[in-house]
Length: 400
Image (cartoon, rainbow, N blue to C red; front, side, top):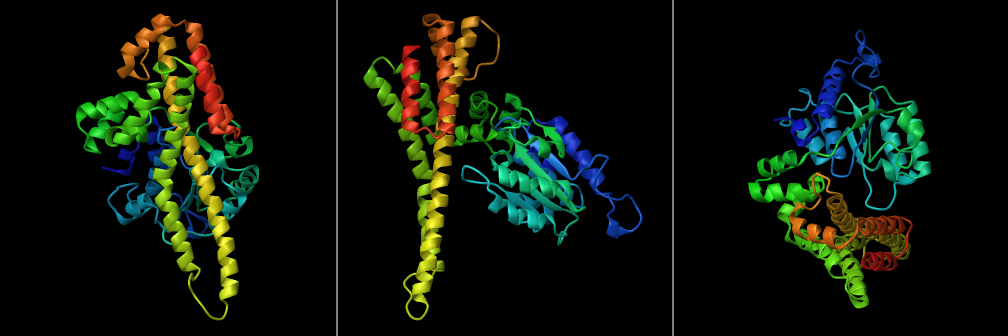
């Protein structure tokens, strides 16, 4: 076993990262005296850009690479170094992610300051940015300066869906070595679910076949009854749009399911954070300085409430987007079946329904419905209220 076993269905990428980690182990720095100087050139470089579709394992691959760079045995997955990197507690591996809608310059400045320091316990100071596509323009400019003139012991690992300028600025991309991941094949996903997660072979095979190549989604579908029920409810929408009343009921159901997921995922956490903040700010105290402490507490409460609202908004969007992707997959299968193309279905367990829909409706109708779903996704990204965007979409789905 090694850290590379966590990177599913990416043999070419793993081979490239292994070679870089082996090269990095022999790099000599300016303070080491004789030997190969610097971390640039050859198989190793100071900035990497991991790209790939959702579920391809961008951050998993980046984290495995970070462990291999720090581990004396290039990623044995058994030593203290590998375990602390995997747990996110290694002193010289710093991860940046966001639960909100964007990564601002304020969040990045702390990481940039760390990037300028020497590592404390390991050979490298590693900065892993999971959501590089969510950086604001100011945050991107700040990161660019750090990537342009890095400390010789600093390595930047950026993760984004693609190399498109909408995801990563051209200037940052030009200074990074690209590593492109692909959608894992179904057999690789099923194998990892069965062997690593202990899921029975039949369930693992089914989850792998309907997850759209997203390993995390496959794991949730295999383990979580609620995730399976939400998928069933979404895929029931095309058959439940016979009247105007059913159209609005379907819209309410999609938005309501997203709200329920927000409550389930963030409700208890929000309350715990508020209680923790109150205790840390001396709630219930008395005596000198209480008034000043209360003013500071109110400011901290407002900041926490803002963070929680942003987190809830992103959770809601992600939940709705998963539903829309499932719906798009359904109509994609209908369109493909209408053309008689021999390609893998997105929802193979809905083959009979898809066959019936392809027989009853035209290919043009399926295409228009796909376009309505894509328009809804774009509307949600531009802050259109979910209820309005979803109602417009299901109305278009009924019209065909």
